Image (cartoon, rainbow, N blue to C red):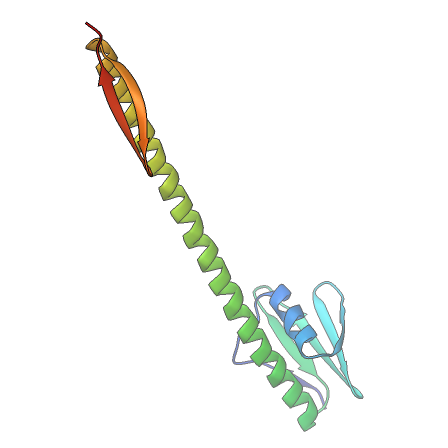
Length: 141
């Protein structure tokens, strides 16, 4: 008896599937577009289609169903963690770009102030007070 199972959780990420199989403490073989798992006497195969993996197994024992369900749960947990990590990295990258933009604005503003002061005959000194920079204009008469 052969069975092709469509899981409730679409398995779309091979890296997360392999992590889920490792978390399930099973022996598996990665053969490119298919991953074979040996559970007792049963062979469970994850076959990569265009957009997802489907699960094939040739037995109707409870052990196989439980194994597939446990891999699905582990996959979902690992996939959610990956999505959260990617979102965190995206937000960190946006924050870094925003800080760089702010720093570039401050430098441009500082250069503009110094240039304007020099045109009016002042010398400009930078004085640091804590985390702030104060530009002091000095003119010798």
